[in-house]
Amino acid sequence: MIRKIPIAVDNIIIEWIAGISELKTDIFSGIYLTGSIPLNDFHSGKSDIDFVVLCKELPKGETLLRLNQVHRKIEKKFKESGLSGCYITHKYLNIQHSQSAITLCFNQGRMKESVFDMAAVTLYEIKTTAITLCGIPAQALPVTISINDVKRFLFKNINTYWKSWVAEQPSFNSHRLLLILFPRLTEWIVLGVARQLYTLRTGTITSKTNAGYYCLEHLPYLYQPIIKEAIEIRKDMRKRLLNVKNAYYVQPSFKRARATVACANYIIQLFNKEYNLENERSA
Image (cartoon, rainbow, N blue to C red; front, side, top):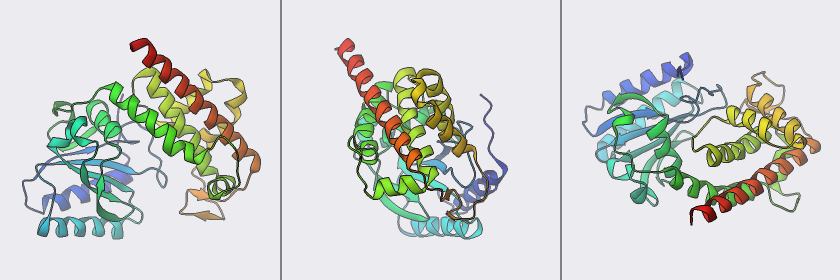
């Protein structure tokens, strides 16, 4: 797979790495891109620039203050730059140590300490798909994680985080209202759970778009229209008259919301059935 960093992203990355270099410290061992960019599914205005910075120790004191300044400068220069990621130490390259690890997380323009809650997926991406920007090559890092660790995490994630968005019994709550109003949430939910099913079946991590195409081929015809719509929404970069943060344009549809919930519930149930069968066979 040829991995190409978009020009707009490249400008942000160059400035960010230059800012980190100016800190004149040796605590940084490597900088890596994960998420949509290595998977060739980056969409400007929608996708985050997901990153991981490996550190000998987490930045603190004066170094942390100056690192914050680097991020603030980038946020000011590149409106909604999309930089989102974490600073972790070498210890947490082992999944057994990272489950409850505290990392330095940067998201939505803010730096804060945070639990490494996406450790399983992030570490597996470092091991398999990450782009090395500088420092130790990702493939040379002693990352200790298996695909079974990832699957266990996905099982928990799909039955907590995703189920909270698509409850079994339809109800008119805040989540449902948002889903009715914003097409982007159909993309996010349908393709989000599609990725989990893809990983369970193939043992690899793929992009949201690719997972959508996979489900078009492997799910019942009943769900094809909403999966196609989710893919089209992801690819739709047109500016809309009514929108929130550009990508979240307003286009109310009860039909789209119902189809989204039905498809997501089906994928969640299918995931659980296949996950449990897989565990029974390996027991």
